[in-house]
Length: 321
Image (cartoon, rainbow, N blue to C red; front, side, top):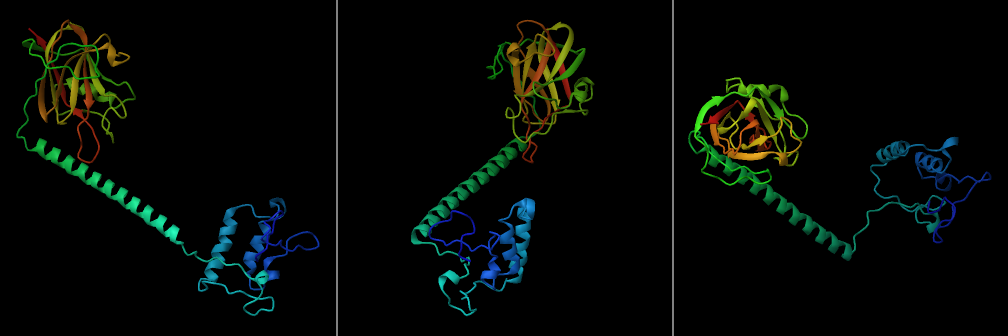
């Protein structure tokens, strides 16, 4: 109606008339062409909710939807005078909502923003395409390398697992295989599949312990996951062999002072390697025997669907001569 219905309105807008009881005169009384539904919802929105006012925005939305459907064919409401004829005084005008025409400055700003959004979108698309091409190129390279071959890696002892140890040629000659008394899943954060850890020493490479499936590579969710072997007495190993279908899994071999060390800084890295699809032999270098040997996975194998998971079928521990 072009009138301010609340106290202390702007000077440029006249106040709305009120009835004897002080309530605002309904808009459809001032202008008969105002839909009764909108008039009622406008008045009720000013009332105290305790005495019949609107309590939720859903009520307003329902009325707006109803009126919009009834007047869908009307894009603009012409100015209506008090006598019902078009073209009255502006104080008698019905205010309408009209899509504003953007100014030249606004059009310039919109152009700049659209350009920025387009450039960012193009950059994201290029990055995604490059990542996909790199992923499949890496998969093709690893898949075309022929039958699985054993990977042998040795390393001198050190007390930090933050960086892979340097290769060494001082590994001991392998002797007889030795079976640990027990194995358990070693996890610094959460658990993956602890009930299946015993399958890595059951003598059957087809029975698998599997990690959880992760959407991101280690160490985003956790620093790693491992299998801890406990022997009846300290042993000195020359090799650790791992049967696994998870090519690309990166592992480190550690010695520990207990079956459940609080963190990896208390362990020593004695070897490392990357698993192939099949049998992988990792040479280790131990300065002293240890009763606890940890196979620690620092990187999982890609699954091909954008996630990561590794499986181990069998771990064989070979003593040094």
